[in-house]
Length: 549
Image (cartoon, rainbow, N blue to C red; front, top):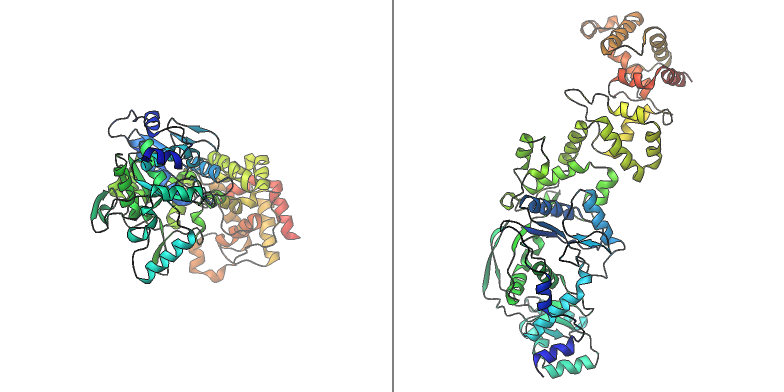
């Protein structure tokens, strides 16, 4: 039996050969400096923040090199795939404004000429290349059971040998064609393994775009390339897909760095051009003085849905990702705040080799700064969109009370130093709830120095009935509060109060705090005059009567 006949026996239903696919996916017509990059998440759980980070990096690299950014979904581990996982990946990238040139639009539709972009739909392609490798003695069928492999691993551990299917342990490598055919006819399940030509005693030296020169032993392990279900492992799919999609630069987590000898070996065995690799250090957390990768199990910020649920401004998250991606971004941004951040070109030489710490405080500060620079209408529209999904009752209220909401959000917004009361859309309700008649039913007030109810009511009654005028500007408003202080025995001038505090019942700050707390329950709010103007006299009086009881 020839090897071609042997391959036809083992893989009888392969419609096309590799030449068909090589012609179907021709080299891209791009400039020499253009990068073809991809992000390749798996739908095996919630979308990880690292996927968004890599997506942002690759989007930037493609845009600034006039290249192509691909979304490829690696769904070959179908036992771990979660329901709706593919759509959640797409929705997450879209939510964070990470647009890609090619890839699935949803589970059924896609864009681009180098697909399918979901690996489970590329089964025939992988079969064709396995058949080609079988014909050329690059792979072989292996019938080793899970029990046999476990026993082998335990033997290797006991002898303190390397773990893996290689050398004398790769027993199926020596099976004859007749022996294989007999096992197949007996319906023994099998996988296809790489017939590695490597020698572990030899070294491979490779230039990684982030790590620099890296050195590893050659790969000599016969890794599984095609599983018994006909789907590929990551190792095989990655090589075939990146070859046919003409990926020029592969950016991925540095946990894959140790697999580099295997991947380069396969590219070379198949006669493919080896792409450039950039192994990006993961975003880290510090715990008990030690660094660790962000964990799906331990860290809520690992789940991108949490960013959406908490209402992080998308632009602020993108700014933060850029600071993580390149050490020189912050300096650039300070000098180019009026520019689109995507005009900054990410470079591999400025990437953090050891992994950047996740800095929630920095992210929140970026979010506060960003929100403070938006118009009240822009904040309002974003808030409505967020609330429609996560707080429908509040969304209904602020849509109904649009004018009050926008005026409230506009308080102290257009000043030289705008207020920065909130970083997240989820925080806004707790900052402005008291402005809405429907929500204002307080049980607690943050009274400060003046707590006697009769004195509080006296201050409020005299002020509202004698001094308050809704048309006053800030100076007029404050001067009348001072007049109120003079009438009721409080110091209207803080210097006088500090010199002789015993001569007064309190000071102007104490009196204005009574008014503030009465109308908002809080001792810390934006400009009180503006708040009162938005509330209106009738609502002010209603709130005073609520205190009277």
